[in-house]
Length: 383
Image 1 (tube, rainbow, N blue to C red):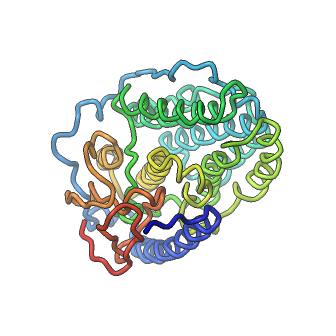
Image 2 (cartoon, rainbow, N blue to C red):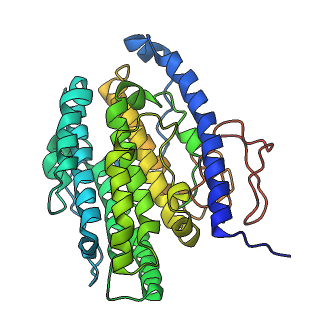
């Protein structure tokens, strides 16, 4: 006998789970953060950093410029049909680039003051067109070329998906079919695809460097998590609605984003797709997990760059490791709900049917049962 949960009930359940789990992660993070406080450079000699995995692909250390392009489509740039959302998304790109450039050019001590104000000015006066992030953060691009390309490739998927949803020339069925084609194109075209498996967010957020950025730069971290709130929320705002309905819906969503979500510093964890766009997450779980995993990679890189106790070579290695941890190529032919060992590199918390709920801190476990099973809070798990 099969049961189908209503979307409203599912949203409530997922939201409750997210809040409960986020609180657990918060206490883990607080304990971890307290261990980091006051040690400064001495941590370099006492903290054990996980080693780089063996047999990494050659491309992961590449610093050459390699511009990548989106799939062709009549819908490209149709997000401008919902112009306030398009402009907000343009400003998001500028903010990330400003912060990364200042982090790697010796201006980290200005992040909460000058950098924050510079980003905030752009958020209030967004550019009319999507900027080229590499031109805003050239030093970061030269130092971490592949990482920038990984970010760009998933950002292209983000952008094209909302372009499809904002198109006025396609039916809902055609939009769903094209989004599936976009995801296939994303996973096959270049090697920079992020996995669509629901990763163990609790594990990814419990590395030796985790929480460093949000502790040192809470205001800027609030902006980044505000971006993630918008990038997650916009899918349910757009999906299945006419253009008039989309524009009407974004009046409230955009106001909440610009006035509230961007300036919150009280979040316990980054916003997750199943929480802010539950209907889209149910329809496209792999896509939603991909975006969650990319956002976690942003957090991990932020934390690494903010960890003064690491040397530059150590930071380079840990960024390569963090990148590989969430790459689709590292999880090829693997299934949700299974732990493949490898020091947490292949630890996928949930089965299909629980999209976006990869957040699972140490101690809560998961169920190895069939598709759609509830996570079992008592199950043991190992990294």
